[in-house]
Amino acid sequence: MGLGGTHGECRIVPQMPGKIALLVIASAAAVILASAPASQAAPASEILGITALGSGASEAWVLAPGGARSIVVFLHELGDPVPEKYLGWLDSLAAEESAVVFPRYQTAATHSPQQMLRAIRVAVTRAERHLAGLPVTGFGGGPIKGVPVIVVGYGYGATLALYVAASSGRWGLPVPKAVVGIFPRAGRFPGVALPRLARSTRVVLQVGDADTRSAKSAARDLWGTIESHPAARKRLVTVRSGGGFRADHGAPLRLTSAAVNAFWAPLDQIVYDVRGG
Image (cartoon, one colour):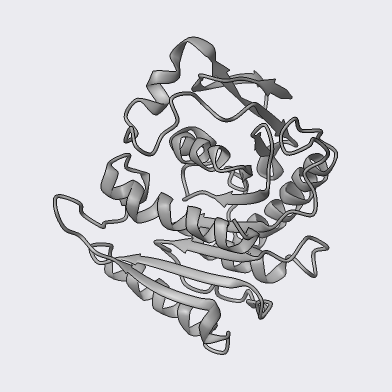
């Protein structure tokens, strides 16, 4: 289901059993973006089309700007399987010329990491095929293909992001130029081997100084799995609290200037770096 839209509020509306679509409501843009810092948020949505592909755990939403120079695969935290909570951030990525793929991956019937990874594989494969055939008006037109792919995950999605980035090549998908894990809540999945990342892939892990002890342990565990990755291609970043900003687990979803500077801005810089501007 493709939906063109600008200036929109995100609402979850049931379309049919087992299917959820993201509707963009033209009259309510302020509900989504007004709370974002004015210096960071565009005055109107840069997402020109939202397409829901597939169903169940393998469903994905594709958020397309007018023209794209990169693709960001965004993996959510557990319990947030639709883009609503993330729409401000996704809109910001679209404003910076990235098409965004947001896999659902989590349903009542999807419990194990293996099931989630299978769902993500199906969803991302379908989404990238969709984007490859999608004409865009910006940057001379033509399909969104051959552009850098960046995999981003928050919370449980941060751990999944490493697995997805490391598995993409053998899944027949483009090898990501970068993978960004934001405040992981789980370390390596027991019984699920983490393949070696391509040496060319940039890796950034962020951990909050006020996040839980288990989350910090998860970040250390994931960092240990990439011990042999080239030192110049990886960074472990501690996000520090201060000035009224608390770097706890919920910080990446806040729409304060401090949160935007801590999470949105570094991701933007990574995207710029891997695509050369």
